[in-house]
Length: 174
Image (cartoon, rainbow, N blue to C red; front, side):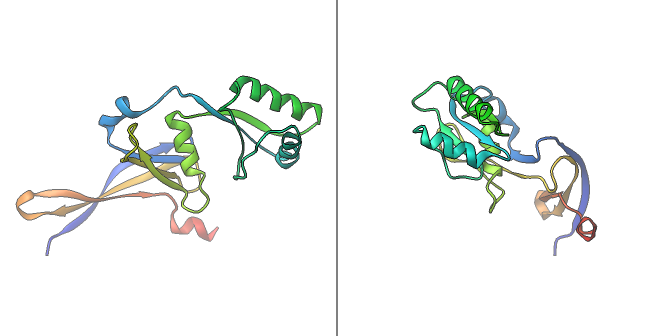
């Protein structure tokens, strides 16, 4: 039977409430910093009222957790300004921003999935395997990362598993 031991690799800091696992050799070639506008998203106390007003004006609104107005047939800045103007004229409290197809927005969309809380990142060509993204425990903070080192006989010691402690058991008792 092979022996295993657990070692600390360090900590990972989180400021976006999410983490990724990705081979670093793909960051420069696959990470899309700038993106094309795809929608204007809005949320907040009065998102349902704004959604109803926009529907009455002929806009199609997504029915996701965060409301979206597609930008496929219009300028994203004009759409954003129209949403802000409509909210202001009707004294509605909302937050709005342009969503793009850049990599960060893609990660945010994956981690907003209420059921899975993360998902698969795809290469620019569309196939899976680039990495995975997921929510980080209770959000921002510092999280411990451990490796399980396994003796693989003629191959020597190798990392067999990596664990990120996102929520300590005693945190649930509070």
